[in-house]
Image (cartoon, rainbow, N blue to C red; front, side, top):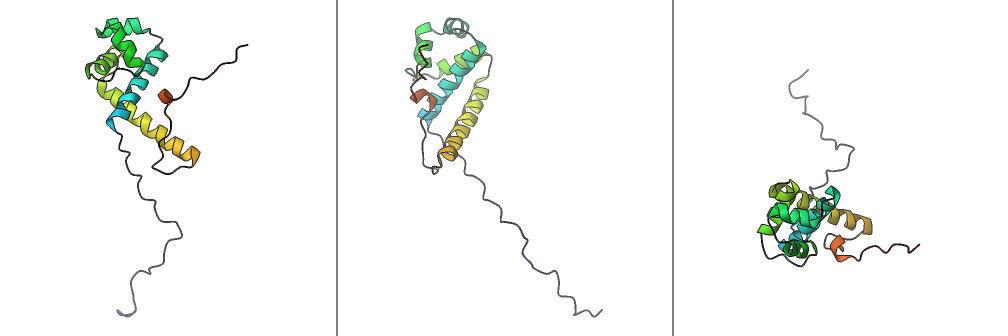
Length: 136
């Protein structure tokens, strides 16, 4: 074989589609995150089956403060969600992680389900009316 007969590897394109670019990370505004964190903490409390009075006593927070927080009325303090998370047995960092993951998945899932673009902001569970049950 002659030295000049080898032309190197052939450059045939692969028979596969190109890779999709990575999804951009969702930037969550603080007020939306605060509402979502409140909703997540309340869902965890309901799943544990613990009343607000018990959580308020364990967290050393007033009952009215915690009730207003769970009703989405009281978001002006950083201590309330911190103490709420500790009383439920979670670290605040873990609650922030759960909230960010849930919020990102919820937004992407609703966008995909409704076939909307990335600028679409769905209604969140705390913004929707409670389900009406059949009176029978």
